[in-house]
Length: 338
Image (tube, rainbow, N blue to C red; front, side, top):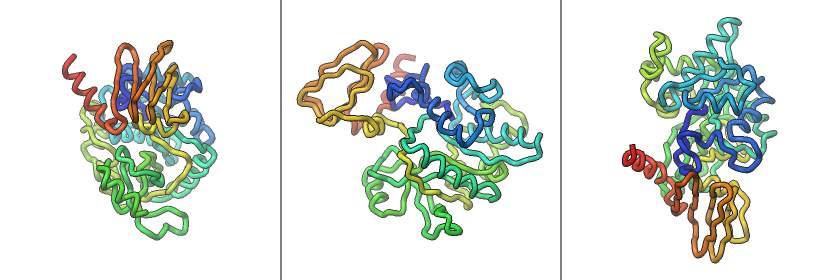
């Protein structure tokens, strides 16, 4: 899934080139390129499907030239993750019908970071083995390391299925407030919702038909994609289905959804400051993250726990604790200057 605008990383991530197409770590590879490479031990390149917004098709082709045109599904409108997944599933099912076989499907956002890729491959293989012949919807759960308010949470039921280390899901909770997140972490029976899913084509098509008939109808009747309601797969299917399971995993995961998550992932100086692609000089400053346009320098004095981000003539200075409000700032600016 590669259609998001990455507004929480504004102004570094912009509508014209959002975060999945950026090189955050100076490796010469964007997040989507790293994601595709991560899956190659599991899925041949010809079986990888990228669903993105129509305005990003050229960027996808540039960054992933190995993909054939038919492997890129171009959404003419943003309709959240459920229609995105439904379209990909419909496309995959059509290919499988020609060969009279079903498909085991992995769904993954294009902007995640995985530090232990060997363990990632092992976990995905375990999940694929579980889902290939079962009418189940499997999600990957990450053990929380802090009371993060930017992630969704999964509460699981005790008692693994067939001693596989896979658990029935009791409920999903969208991004909680800080006190609720603290309670979830303290309870020990919640995982972070990674947004990665594994299922077979039959199981997910059945679930979409049952829980999202308005989405299923669009593809069954050949209607325009824009007729799909805007709904997430979590809200539309996973929170309602009774055959949802979670596979706990620990492979150094971050969804890189906020400046705070990027701060956690990066090397810090002795005062806990992070400087990305920038020449930043810190004085009496602690816990900041700074990124500047190439060739620019910043002198930071007396700041603590702040975001300082500059790109293409736009400067953001914002407390890290307020990072969830950045999307609101962007929306307000879009309204003001449209």
